Image 1 (cartoon, rainbow, N blue to C red):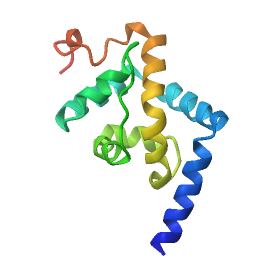
Image 2: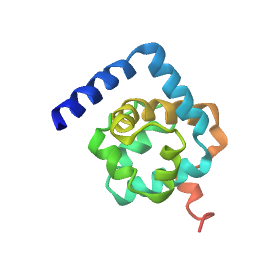
Image 3: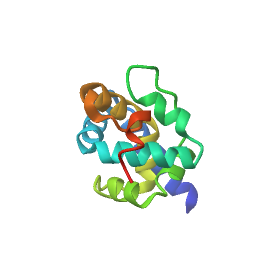
Length: 128
């Protein structure tokens, strides 16, 4: 049974890697992002040892890749769970897609919204 689910998940993940569908997913993720989500993500990434990866997605630098297992660690945060629940895709399909497309979505969002100021050193003193 688990091999059937694995095969289905693999097939869906392969379809997600299609450029047009990938662009649509990146766009959907990007439109769902807010400064608050970026802030929660960067803070939680620091707690679980993934800040180097997440910080690389913010701004114009190269995006470090993230694994599906690391995405699962990040999505253990309650606010981030709520964020991905809004997307409406089962997590066994969504996690591989997030691993592939979330870095690009955050990079695009932070480049298009330079005043987001989340995850930067100067924002930590303004939020409780």
